[in-house]
Length: 373
Image 1 (cartoon, rainbow, N blue to C red):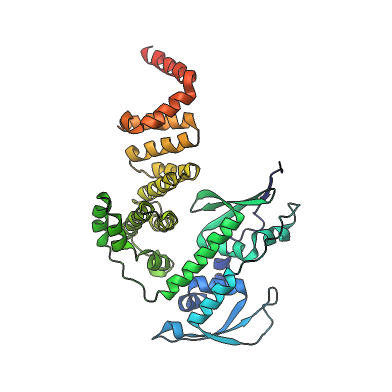
Image 2: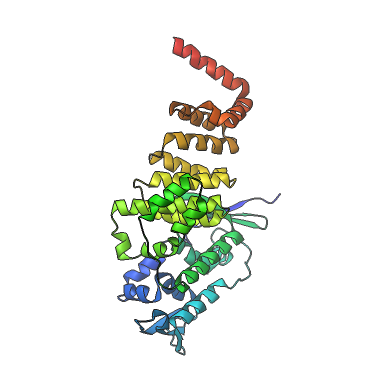
């Protein structure tokens, strides 16, 4: 069996690269507003250096973009100036980023940083932080490479090709959002109606009410106005996104639902809605058979004050599925303290008792003896 090799990605991680470049460009904010923050980043990644913009205020997609293609490492060389409308320029950038290339083999030495960059893909190293991924380690076993990363503070593991496909999906989504035209209005009064629909299991109604929210809210979050939202407004938006994410999951769109919930996490911060959002995210992962991934969000939900009656049974189920029976037992005890009846945790209790067996019986005897002393 091939021996597993683990590479630290500290030396090649690019977290914050776009923001650092922005600090040194006087027109950075203006370019982001006209071209789009993501597309300005895409232009840097693909080597498309913007030299001039002729802005069309009435129809922004008809804004003219003058640019030159600078080969990597030769950004100062002047090439032939090309001109495209903003809409075509965005399509050109996305097309360049979506091309699939051959993955070179993993390096043999930890010090081969160039080999590490090429194996993961330079464009993916640069795109990852734009979507909240912080790459931590690369694990190579035989021909299989896996990335250990953090996203929104939650640890995840992805096979390398799967991760690349996920990043390309984000890039495609960016173009779809830009092509959708004017931003849809966000009516916060719909949250209450969506909550009632969710309580009645009418998930199509939830999507009908809130389904247009994610794209404009993802963009709005990056604007100065989005950063200045009051805590109450953030919580209400997060609550609506949480309802929408759950509705997507219930209707079989697990990936879309999780993406919506991650956006909800960004709006919630550690505010009043955060516990509920992390609970929804963890429950979605658990229902999708990913108990290991679910534990992190569920623990976060517990720490943020999510209702104990909801959290502890879910955590118990996650730990049982991961065969962490002592941890599961602790969650069962917490759930009982919170008032959850055993009838709602029958399967988990049965598996814990079957797995711990005589050790559990002996422990219960000690607890009983101590209580009588």
